[in-house]
Length: 333
Ligand code: RUB
Figure 1: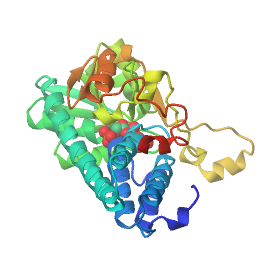
Figure 2 (figure 1 turned 180 degrees about the vertical axis):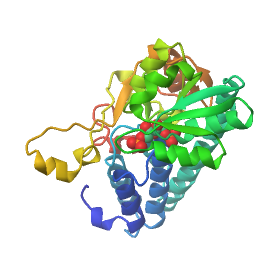
Figure 3 (figure 1 turned 90 degrees about the horizontal axis):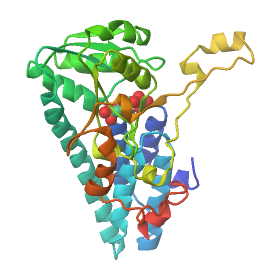
């Protein structure tokens, strides 16, 4: 964590820590929590009532939040959305109010996007279908649950999603909606695929060429689906689209602690053993049938239109492309 950490409000440090340790997880929730942390930071600011000092403080809060997890672009997108509100401010009070207003707007819009996606996505599923999902995506679950209510989904195969077992969260979430769920190990995906009509997953990041970065194993699921001619739908709000990929930046894949994969005891019995724990992978656009956004259903190759047409990014506007963490200041210039 960066300089001045001690001067951040406790609530902000708590949210940053909860994202880092995955108490708060899933790209949408991470984004909404980051916006909430920006708001809390503004409300609990105890420094001098000076515009320049406040802007500097908010940039440091933004850096702290963005540094917690590297892969889901929803996190910097949420933080940047709120930071941009500082550009227009001419006084400290206006700046503080802007942060609160934009953070609230981001959170509201995010929930509304998920609702729209569930509405649009459910319509794409034919009556009486069997769906397979992987990891825990709130947006994917909302699509599936709505499709279930409309008689379109009759059963869900739900992967356990090793090593972190997010499949258990998905199980509870789907059961809350009464959806019949069958838990399967990740390794059973290809075996079960001939019973499946649709794969529905979420996204952490969508690149400008329509590749989808999501929980490790998603690309294997998509591969097995393609082989069986099963449609793959990705449910992704527009703030999961990465502007930096327009200028060729690659998405950083997070690697987490080996102890999520094997126990500490096992590790100590095998000194020097290498254990890799990549937690996301990239599914190329050829393996995706459609990306469901709040703006409608897109072929993955049209992802660039969301960035340019809907979010208004231009090559010139991506000024901070080199290193987002080091250049957050430039957003408020
Ligand atoms: C979660 C994950 C989810 C996406 C989308 O990974 O890969 O599929 O974040 O989720 P982790 P949502 O558990 O490592 O955060 O639709 O809820 O944004």
